[in-house]
Amino acid sequence: MSRVTLSRYLIEQTRSHNTPADLRFLIEVVARACKAISYTVSKGALGGVLGSMGTENVQGEVQKKLDVLSNEILLEANEWGGHLAGMASEEMDNAYQIPGQYPKGAYLLVFDPLDGSSNIDVNVSVGTIFSVLRCPDSNGCTGDLGDDAFLQAGTEQVAAGYAIYGPQTMLMLTLGNGVKGFTLDREMGSFVLTHDHIQVPESTAEFAINMSNQRHWEAPVKRYVDELLAGKTGPLGKNYNMRWIAAMVADVHRILTRGGVFMYPRDDREADKPGKLRLMYEANPMSFIIEQAGGMSTNGYQRILDIKPTSLHQRVAVFLGSREEVERITGYHQA
Ligand code: AFP
Image 1 (spheres, protein in one colour):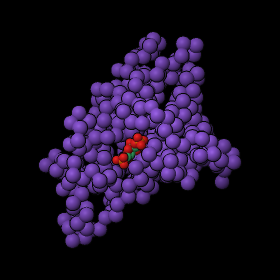
Image 2: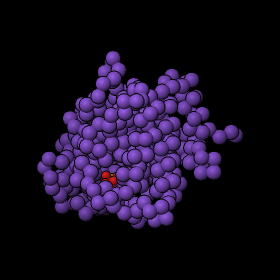
Image 3: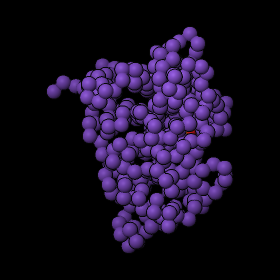
Image 4: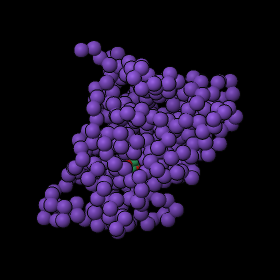
């Protein structure tokens, strides 16, 4: 059987679902940038790309060299094609303006260029997460773009995806009609459709959470995790296993593959930060993907995709994955 590359898949989407040509181009450009990031990541110490820059991003986190390189790769790949009105990145304080010499387009691209950067120097999986929104100005976003153009609920996303740089490089993509997985064929240089029908199993016996924060969690999360740990003789009546990779891409990828529940709850350390994860760069795209694969995603109280952002770097608590477990933990918050 002939192989379906990402390009062919996108062209078929245009025929079957009217995917606009400029959105198709946008996805192809992002995929090309992810290939370049994959190549750069894989060089490791040989390419001099490990270690820190010695600078901090807007979140006050120390930037790794690969955070900065990946950010530059995505900006350079996407700024000239005429498909974007602007970009926003976890690594930049404000919206990125398309340079004046290039035409502007109808879409906004939002990304976390290198998720899981604490894994870089220890050769564990990292990834790139992206989300695509429409420019909100019906006359076209022609002038300089303010941060507020990006402050749209996750339900407004027209596409989202991530690349995972692990034993294989894969691109997982949703255009709003299911989730498809593509594996990078390094010899051919193309992403090939290898995971056609991705569904998160409804129930699971696997959870992911950073247990070292347990003492800081709110009561519903303490209760739920205590019940998970109680195993077969506890109220949930089964033994659970735990995994934590410290890169959301890798934990979500496992959940898309075999189910599970991923949690990054809010905690009581910094009252002004509801959780660690960023709504626009991490939680929204991953929630879109998980929902499109039949899973569920909430902040404990409401569907993440319904949250209207108030700032570009807003944080949020995240509970996502297999429906049965996300419903349970959400119910404990609402009790
Ligand atoms: P970095 O990309 O800044 O390393 O953060 C990754 C992340 O936002 C998310 O991908 C992980 O799930 C989470 O942080 C890991 O956090 P811990 O440091 O608590 O393990």
